[in-house]
Image (cartoon, rainbow, N blue to C red; front, side):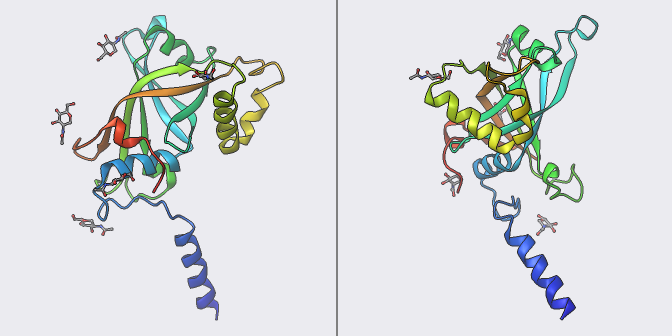
Length: 191
Ligand SMILES: *[C@@H]1O[C@H](CO)[C@@H](O)[C@H](O)[C@H]1NC(C)=O
Ligand SMILES: *[C@@H]1O[C@H](CO)[C@@H](O)[C@H](O)[C@H]1NC(C)=O
Ligand SMILES: *[C@@H]1O[C@H](CO)[C@@H](O)[C@H](O)[C@H]1NC(C)=O
Ligand SMILES: *[C@@H]1O[C@H](CO)[C@@H](O)[C@H](O)[C@H]1NC(C)=O
Ligand SMILES: *[C@@H]1O[C@H](CO)[C@@H](O)[C@H](O)[C@H]1NC(C)=O
């Protein structure tokens, strides 16, 4: 009886992750990229540093993200932080997603552990209060309810957080740098 319960529990856990990325079964890099972004609640966010003592260095940060129903990547930045300052000086950024974030990998560097690199430009979303903006903010806060604290009635709270989206230029799925994904094919509903 006890064993049966454990088995049922494991089964329930397995089926509660319908979007698990299986590299062996799916060599569809578009699907891997889209699924991994959707599953991730944050990205390692790389910028070219604008700090005086780090000139020319890459800088990385942990940035909470959410994807909309088409895969558009939404996030909030503030200019008190590295990332907020950096993109305004050099708006070439790269985000890294690893399935190890979802605790699906035994070894993050193993070729069975998918990694996706997405490069592009940050676009600050105009606070027009139109439907596009409201919907994007709602999607982001649904995924990150604790971030509601930085949003006050006047906008983005004391720290000056602002909502952004990523305009994607290039998507590569690792391992072996062999998974070029066209930006057009990436955008779309999750299958
Ligand atoms: C995936 O395929 C590799 C060889 O291509 C194999 O070594 C590995 O055991 C497979 N992993 C799974 C989970 O099936
Ligand atoms: C690959 O995945 C994408 C996104 O899920 C899908 O649109 C496309 O049809 C798939 N391609 C193949 C060959 O299955
Ligand atoms: C951003 O990347 C593009 C394409 O590689 C490059 O042409 C441009 O010089 C880069 N911008 C900066 C500010 O380095
Ligand atoms: C609404 O705001 C978004 C985000 O700033 C902008 O891209 C879009 O053009 C605006 N749409 C309209 C109809 O004003
Ligand atoms: C991916 O694109 C790069 C250039 O952007 C190219 O050098 C490489 O051969 C491509 N890889 C594949 C598998 O198409």
